[in-house]
Length: 110
Image 1: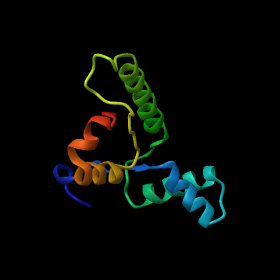
Image 2: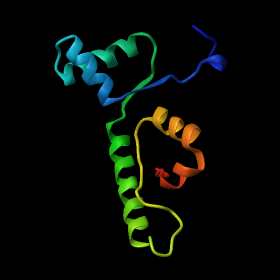
Image 3: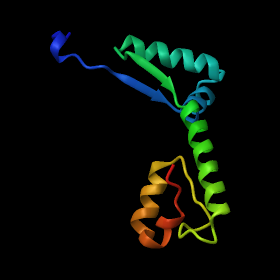
């Protein structure tokens, strides 16, 4: 156990995809899987375990707002359609590095 001045707050976020994969692998329902994961993380010292489903919904709402704004202002706006959005940071990184300035105007800011 670390001294109080050296302790850190440990937070884990679990995506619905990860939960679903584990549930399928171990033949559990998603609720039981979430409970078991939370219990496991708490036993190893994690302070908080969060589900990222809420943040996914929030991101989708923000992407929707951005699309509507771009669609309505497409005549006088330099931001291009189509609007490309992804919840996968790896895809965004790939797109930015391989297609650069060609694809950047199409990527959602959300």
